[in-house]
Length: 98
Picture 1 (cartoon, helix red, strand yellow):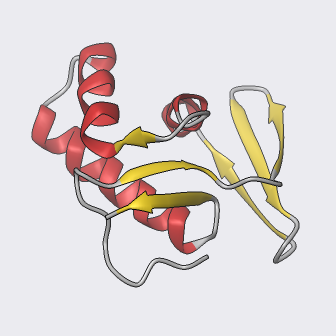
Picture 2 (cartoon, helix red, strand yellow):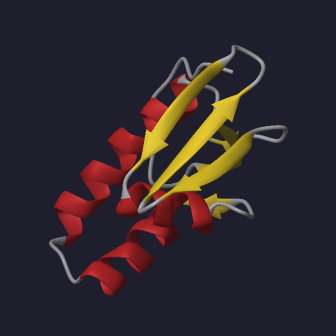
């Protein structure tokens, strides 16, 4: 499912059902059988993926990651929104609300 409009901090996202994933060292590889495509996630991407086991508002996800990684909240929010928009475009996350 491609996203036509960008996610916002108020968007609620979760993992798309039916995806397969496996660990390869520090990386996580996700296969989307719907389009026979796969994506590799680094440590931070993997952490985001772990947190999306249930629907999560983007703003809450950003706050949690800011606390965990002790980074600049504006930069983390911008990076997470970019990452989630890419994941949504690949059909890997479901956007429940915009």
